[in-house]
Amino acid sequence: MSRDTVTTAKRPQAIVAPFNTGKVDVTEIFGAFAELDALSEELVQSELGAWLGPVPNLDAMDNRERRAQGLPLRPLRLTAVSVATDADVLDLGPIAEEQLRLAGKSWDGQDLAPEDRLDGELEGSFAGTLERRVLADADAKRNTPLFDVLLFADDAGIVFEAGTTRQVALIAYRKVEMKDGRTRRAIEDAIGVPAVPSSVAPPAAASAPSMPALVVGEKSAEKNALRKAPAVKKVSAKKSALKKAPAVKKAAAPKAPKVKAASKKAPSAATKAKGSAEKASPKAPKSKAAGAKPKKKATSRAG
Image (cartoon, rainbow, N blue to C red; front, side, top):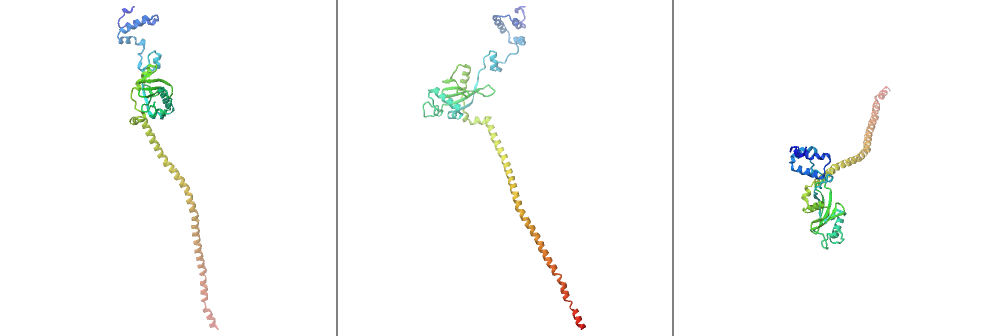
């Protein structure tokens, strides 16, 4: 049965039926595509959905899958994750300083030190025009830096691979000179957007998630310090109390025997007093014996 005799509802299946045999040439394939394009999209999807499978979501495809399918890569979108200007670039470390030195050398051929490139009194100075942007993929889950861009002299610049001194492009009149058109367009779009330096943006820094984390860390450090301080004082107080307690006991120990000895001596003195009183009491009978003189009178009377 030819494709011309089938109903419109079954026409999509009749068009692709020869593909199952594997004996079709390029002309027949393109002819089948032209016939399918002439039909409604809903009809083709309903009749060939099970045969073709689900329609791929091109927006959800990453570049690796796009390459495997022979599809063009998705447009690259870059965003600035860090911006520094003029002398602040010197605080970014030796890599940034070397990038500045190479940028100046590419500009006028003079191999000047990074500090000299920012000296406004020297010829070829970038003072007041230097800007360093770190660009990352805006669609990636992580802001992994891809390029370090140094802009200077109003409309010139140089592009390095992020974190290195490997030059990947030059910039003249705000136009990027490189072979990769996809990356070139992305860098031009990124540097065309005004960027606020990271070091001089207090409102943005205050609203950024990193600043509250630092404040919380400082508060927790203060709380930990306050918690630890009394503990140290208590331990020292206990140690000092333990050191002082024996001294008090030693001082009181020798005094106690003296008091007890004194109390013991006091009874001995009283005992001596009582003994003397007792010794004195036996003398009373002697006085009575001496008073028994009437007996002598009796003898005298007898005589």
